[in-house]
Length: 406
Image: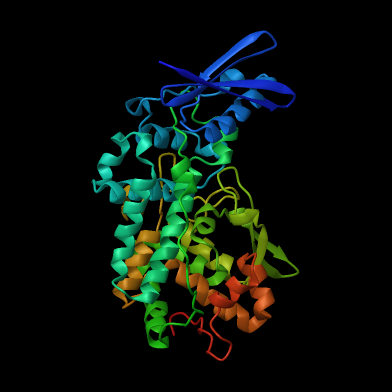
């Protein structure tokens, strides 16, 4: 079989690449040590890019940490192996449960829909299925749901972008830097990383639901305390703080602070959680809000020391004075109340696609009446004022009355 050679200069050294058959390999010496490795790519452009990473690692004495790949399609690692390794390193990556589950769910849905297979079979598929054919089939299947409705098309396009961005994060720079997949056979995944995002034509300004619907939800929420107390906690935190779902699930009791007789919740970085855009911020609350939450936690024997979760996990090691099955029979593990929140709101007549995130937008509308749009932007943790302007209903729309149990 004939071989093709390509040489280039990198960091003052001559790098030799060889192509035999379909794939390129690197074969050179650094400090009299042979460095040989298949690059698993078939174009010279991709080979040069991969080789530069390897040479840089070798010069730093880290060549042995680079994963050796095989070129045959049947040799690539399975998606399930990657997911397992990703979950095993959650603490190292400092990712919240909701973030990890969101990334994995996105990857599984893309492959499931793109290949037309049950989601339960995705784990056994090889990584080389993450190609343009699978991505395009998934996109087309989702876009067909719009049925010519331009508003729905925009919503689906935005959802596609979110799913694609989340799935790519499983193979992101942070994982590469920490060498999470050492020993696994990972293909180049160029088509997966280069897949284009959908164009979102318009993002409409937020409009509040009917006040009668909101009143029904507000007046019924305390019924959750009997069977779904974690859902009640999630609702209160969303409504009064405007925190994102991941922030609510990561919140500890020590996030509450009193200053000049005012109560604040301080969103911050944790070992298992980093706020979106690393945004650390404080949100002012009604002064009796903490007392209200502690009363319900104490009533159930929930742990509420400074480092405990406000919405308890209820997993092994839970220190409450009642068995988990009594208080956490909500069949929610990682979501810890948010699935129940969606069911509760739908039962009251809610028909919009979003649930928890809509509470954040209702909060944005209320806070905009008090602080103005710039203050709302800061409280919500937005980097772009235009996002806040879409979240908050127009000022002439009456703000929601936060009066419970009238």
